[in-house]
Length: 248
Ligand code: NAP
Image (cartoon, rainbow, N blue to C red):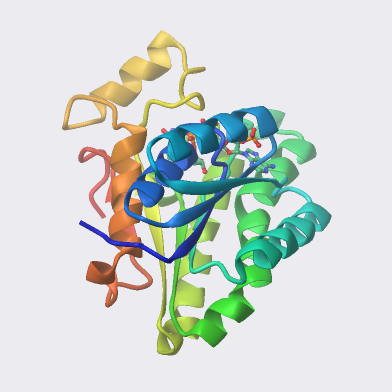
């Protein structure tokens, strides 16, 4: 079992779904967790759940699509905790449609939130991590960043971009005791996938050898592993957590 006692973690998109599960699991393993997202009411609920279980958590309103909000949020988190040692870039959105129908805004919104947001937040928090000579950066990519998916050129590009960013940054910071990895979930039951229709759901299920969707907690457990001391020598890796949907 990982022990993050005394460590400070930050999870973006922690108001629901996978991010919320990551925050809960990191706190359960002893980390003090900063939960960031736009929906402050849901963040407060998640913080209350963690505290009720004896964990330590705090909410920060942060919009990863806004550079100003990222700067202000990072400043507030550093003022409160002094550093972020475990950063989980999880916030993400979809704007699915076939390429000829895709608006420039659909592209910009998805790339801005999923990829540029992760880049800017990482940059804002990296200096104290480098000074501290210990860090874990975990980017939540997707199976479609590896395989592509019709109707998702924007989303798949953002998730493939995160993999390139992960591997490049891993090379830059490995000598400072910082690992940078990605988790690529398959089909996970969360509010994001609740909007799929029956046909889309059946197509997904047919592609999963394990015969079931994954859970947010299963993704969170892989994040906990990559953040743990047991994973100290793993960097630049993309961990597929997908029930066999894609084997890289
Ligand atoms: P979700 O239920 O839709 O949750 C997305 C989270 O991201 C929410 O907490 C949302 O919070 C936050 N978010 C969205 N835009 C944001 C912004 N501009 N600033 C800050 N936070 C923002 O999705 P999920 O299924 O948990 O997905 C989490 C991550 O896993 C995403 O990156 C997604 O692409 C990835 N993923 C999911 C699946 C899946 O099957 N579910 C598969 C592969 C990868 P607010 O609305 O409160 O801001």
